[in-house]
Image (cartoon, rainbow, N blue to C red):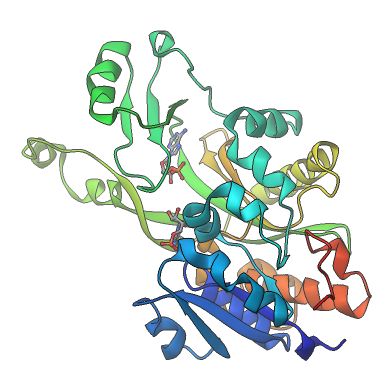
Length: 344
Ligand code: AMP
Ligand code: AMP
């Protein structure tokens, strides 16, 4: 089968424009599955050949058969797990680029810490018992509100006052690392057995990133002030070159370790998210086992991909390139999670 016998499909949100543009540039048909009322960007930017509308992202499975008939390969991004949840994503029967087995390791804090720890990565200390808080910590909530309500404290009394406002919510208490937060975007090609650094970003978060624009004197005039970490965009950043060696080593170690915990391991795009301290240590608070939206500033390529490719190479395009190579080498089953590869 040729490339035009396949479609690349994704949910219309997060990094869909980049993914579809990359797929189009590599010669695939493209489909955006959009939420009604959120279609405009996919009409305004001509990267989707077809737009399928659904009332809510949660209704995605109602169009799955349609996608299977079109021989669509789904590219998961942050909105899949955010709106469908891990279980529904694991149940997807359409061709799915990436490893579903790794989702379990990524979404379970203990499993994630075990995986990263064995790969030699330093993580912030986690406090399971609030009574043991003996340093600044960040309390993070999970679920739909992404970044809202996080708070910083350094003692159990203050923690207990604040946590009362979050009854029934799941949270983690993490040591607060003072340094600069950096998101490093990787791509692991199982076809070439190579880990590439694609790009890096800094998040622009509301309202915490507004604090530096107000003097401490004025900050205290906000009687009830709660910082939040709601992402509104991403800024490009290029790492100090002497950090690259370590970043490549860490990316490779995470991939090697992933092969010990699941049959296929982690492949495709992933991101290590952490804080770089003044000692140049990278303390990782999260791994994302898929494309992250911080790659969006680099639709026309990044400084790193410019070094390796003689054409604009985004992470979205790199995904499509991997699928294209897999089809051309008759190895599609190696990059697709289930065995629907090539079936109608
Ligand atoms: P959305 O794309 O708004 O449907 O968001 C889906 C998930 O991805 C949410 O958990 C968001 O917090 C996260 N997300 C969306 N856009 C970005 C971005 N530009 N940078 C980082 N995370 C993002
Ligand atoms: P997250 O929702 O886990 O991506 O975290 C949101 C933001 O909180 C990050 O972009 C960082 O600015 C900050 N952050 C998260 N964890 C830590 C940590 N352990 N130490 C310092 N800052 C953190």
